[in-house]
Image 1: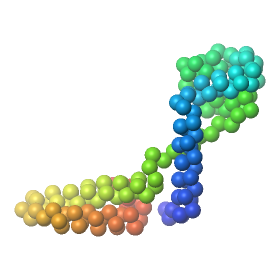
Image 2: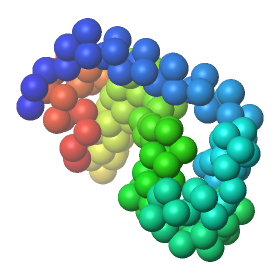
Image 3: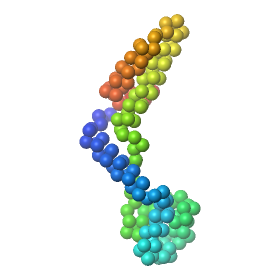
Image 4: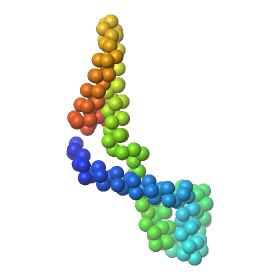
Length: 153
């Protein structure tokens, strides 16, 4: 697997940050409501839009009323007829480093819990300080080692 580059990470985080701002600026409006706003601002009727998009007028009505989940192809036709682009982008819920750290902590805890359980069966319960140290070491190894170990069980 290709090692992630710092520049790609920065680019992804910038795109995600921009997309979050875009999400906030839509003020919770659905894609259908946004389409209707654009259509009205352009002074276009649903009938005209449907003809320009080569789809039934009832489809435009359902999309605008958010009563129908449209295919991407239908949305692309409608938006193209409105001289708009459809933008779909992943939005990170947290920065990449935080996501990776959380996953490393989870995997380290799983691994050390298994070790702890095995040792308990043999009446060799390690002390909490040792457990915490082992978890930290495992986290570090997962974050700086092979990325596949971080995500695969």
